[in-house]
Length: 175
Image (cartoon, rainbow, N blue to C red; front, side):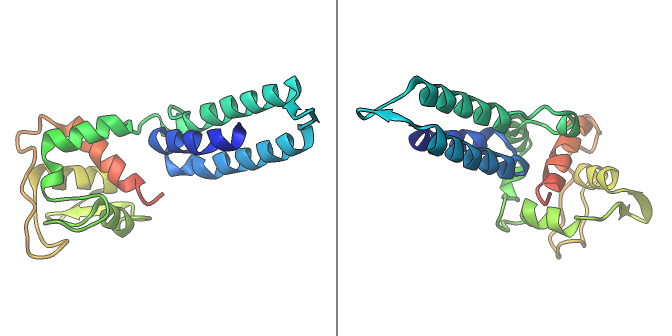
């Protein structure tokens, strides 16, 4: 029962959790495997209630651990569905993709380029990395990724919260 439930639980975890929890999930799974091997007592081919209860409790713990998204450390991150909606609504996917270059660089490439960077210079002015990238996405610009300029996506400045969520999402891809 546990072995059959693991792939489904892993898929659910992949959808609702960020890769940071994957290692904890695998560790919990290995612990459950040890418990199920040790605690599995069969009487005429039927597992005891203890084994069934332990298996169900372990699956529940795995799912709860994997789906715990709103911790203090990650409370400022937008949910995956929210980011997906923002990407569609703002047309980001017309020029960018998660892991391949379209017109502009992939989000993974952007994240890797700025990993460990704390400052960003935009038109001669130095900003924190996050603030600088929010301004760059809002106002547009060129020169960082080749000759193709990025058009301004929020010239009036009305969508700063949305753009900040997208920038945080992209920067978090390399973590």
